[in-house]
Image (cartoon, rainbow, N blue to C red):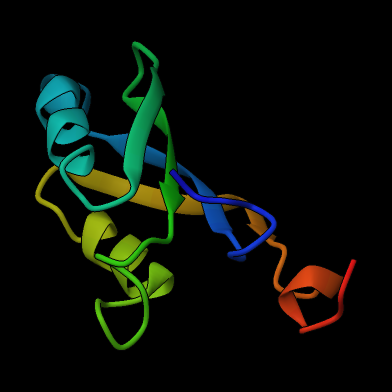
Length: 100
């Protein structure tokens, strides 16, 4: 579990659209990516996925959040993806070496 006072957090919310014939299979594959969680799947193939940056997908240790989203978007059956939310609290005082 991340201690939010000690570590910054980087989270993306992405709307993926899959071919309606294999939405469940695409959702299962998306959920296998490090830090990814599929939250909602609609009948039309749309799904809401959050990706939390962690040691498995972060920068030098992994591919980085944007590259992870790109890899997810390139899965067979994914029609489109749109970044709908991004949060990064690195600019907060506790992550800049300022005592709070």
